[in-house]
Image (cartoon, rainbow, N blue to C red; front, side, top):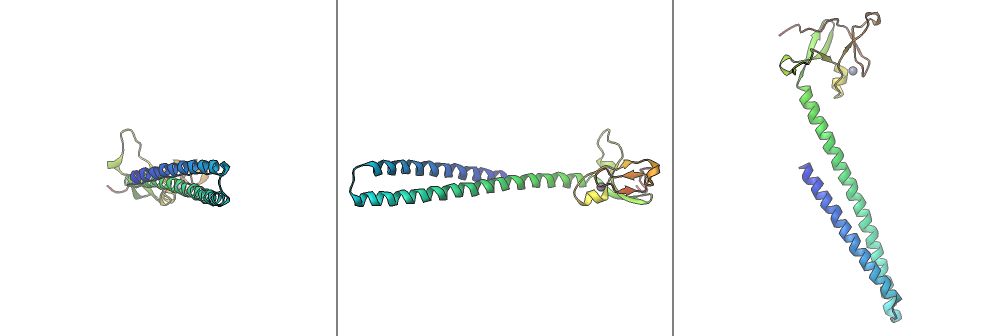
Length: 164
Ligand SMILES: [Zn+2]
């Protein structure tokens, strides 16, 4: 559906380009007419026509700009949608787990990929749809794990599952 929307928007941009080209051709003809030997009445009408064509050109350009804005917005939304879809899939790999004095999101055993170590991600960042793997900190800091992104500290020394 978003791909169809982009195709539609692109087609409209091409249509606007066609209209702009036609208007430019009409404007050229009018300029030629103005320079021809004609009666004052015809001259006045030709000048009126020139005004109408110029106004149509302005409208066409403004419509094209709006169309480009819409096309950009569709692209932004598409990118946001795929980011959300990726996050939704990533979320499914973790479960909220109590580890010693802290509650963090730990990767599910069934969702672990080959070679992937057991790890926990920050619950604060998780709520903001951001994955941040907790890292061990020096014991002198008073908390054994910290989030590199939001700097939250968590009180657990060894990551292991209490149940399952
Ligand atoms: Zn965090």
